[in-house]
Length: 275
Ligand SMILES: N[C@@H](CCC(=O)N[C@@H](CS)C(=O)NCC(=O)O)C(=O)O
Image (tube, rainbow, N blue to C red; front, side, top):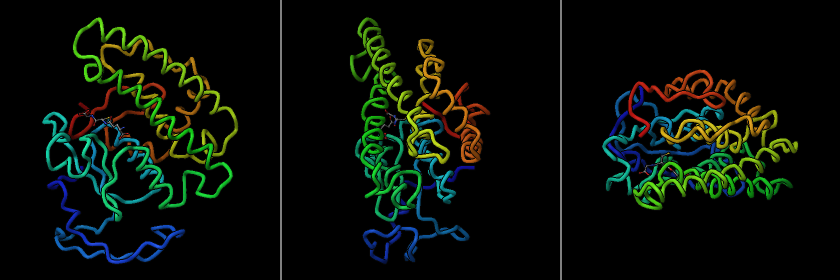
């Protein structure tokens, strides 16, 4: 069961040691003083603010792959809790996810993933590695290109208002742009990089697999245009990623079923709602 507690209680923890540049955050002894700690509660360093099947899912998947224990705080989307004052203290933009860390709260999915990959020294080429530059380019393209365009599909009214002609036109143009992004990612997935669609999963793999899931499901009245079979390398990625034990654990936690990336169904979580 997800844990619920008032937003921001981890702010009451105080970090007591300096981080050493160039060393993995979790490879060293770090000290926390818990000022307010529930009795019997484990002292965890990471807290994910989430709603089922929201962008927080990508962070959950990566935390599971890293086998890192974390706390969760369920955001009540039906009550627009993410837009409230308390949540905006963690993410001024009022969007899910936020990950609370020893370095403070982080928002924006790609920023969180990058922070995790550096903190644990895994799931991405590390600073100084020869393929770091290419990896960063594709991570930012995923976040700032594909994911940003997907938000236009899912939240069209925020971009062109509620008029149906404007929404239809926006959707048509956005489909074409997303198809273009996916074609480029498909080619990149088949190019033999170690940081994308390789044997060991990367943060890009989980981020993209989750985008494929959402494209197949959302918006509820307008997803028929999408066909994963137009991008065979991405289909293979989706099928491979859903076999990972990390995906099975995340799928169980958020009620995603057995094929959450290649043939998804709507989430049936025990608590909370996706929208
Ligand atoms: N660029 C943001 C996008 C996050 C995002 O779109 N979050 C959605 C849920 S998947 C959200 O909070 N929607 C609520 C809203 O727009 O009010 C990120 O990567 O973190």
